[in-house]
Length: 233
Image (cartoon, rainbow, N blue to C red):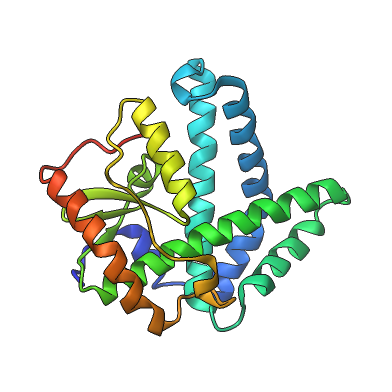
């Protein structure tokens, strides 16, 4: 894999798993509040394009908070995958959050949001496993690229990988409604059960899954030979 400097990747080389757990615990409250704020703004205004300037800034500020938290969650998964399985990490996050509130409603709401975040970040790690298995050079998008849908940059093209087929279809529809290219929004072809309850994809699953994903990836790259402006969803 090509070694391209990315400060998001470099930071993971200078901290321990315990430090990442500490960062994650410290960010649980901000993650929860930012997630609720995004839901509120979307329900009130719809697309960021429809938001007044101040609300649009608030939307993207909170989206950046989510992205930064998700980056920490990825590093927790990388460094502590053997310590936790999926449910154990979710239980750990929920227990730490519950120490900050006595509201059962908020705890249940947090757990649902945290579960979704783990699924998404676990899927990101699986995509990296698949690309590496397929011998495909890539780099993780910067925070700015990620905020505009560029999870990974492959052959100069920003890709947004979704954790299930329905989410990919819905994201493509939203992109097309906004006048953006949807060809680089792909389903990873990883099913929830493929993880067998773990935080990383078992090695024996990778070959079969990348065989399904690669034709779609190649077609999208061919359709985007020249680097494009990353779509905003």
